[in-house]
Structures are given as structure tokens and as C-alpha cells.
Amino acid sequence: MKSGFVYIVTNKNNTTYYTGVTSSLVKRVYDHKLDIGSVFTKKYKLNKLVYYEVCNSMLEAIVREKQIKDMNRNKKIKMIHNLNPNFVDLFDEIKKLSL
Image (cartoon, rainbow, N blue to C red; front, side):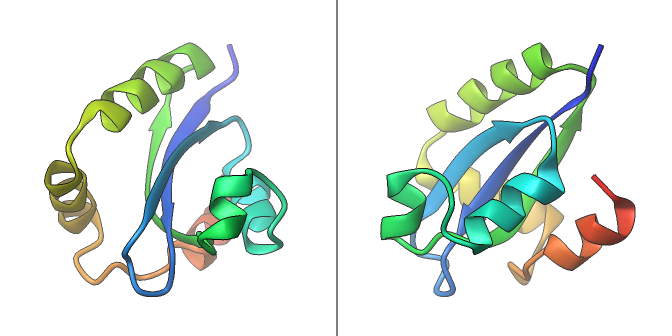
């Protein structure tokens, strides 16, 4: 089975969040940085990766994405803060890991 990723991108001011799922995290985040992707992420300039999880399969990633999307905003922010307290862009980190 192919692994999957669930991720959250935001804008430079961390005011709007988008949760997505992909089988190639580096490629997908790079697409967001190039404004290739959803109309929503392009409209709100959501291209800063602040959170991601590695899942054992795409099905697991999709299930996890739905769980995260069902969370209220404060819960999502706390979850991000636990992994990434300064809300730094994790793109360079995932490029090194080749996720």
C-alpha cells in the first residue's frame, strides 16, 4: 500500500487554514507555493506548510483529514502549535526528508 499524508497550509499571517491529503507531500506543497491547486488556497495565498502527518495508507490519510476538518479552529491551532510552536514553514524540512 502507498503511504499518504495529511497536511495543513496557511498564509503568512496564519489567519486562514487549509487541510489536505496527498500521496506526495513535497510535490503538493510545492504546487501550493506555485499557486497550482485549489481556488481556495490560491485566493487566500495558503502556501506555508505548518503541519503534517505521515499515514500508513491513503485511506488512513483521508480518514485523518476528515477528523481534522471536523475539529474547531482552536483545536486545530493547538494541534499545530504542539508540533510547530512558532508556525514556521516546514517545507525545507520535508524536502530534506523527501516526503
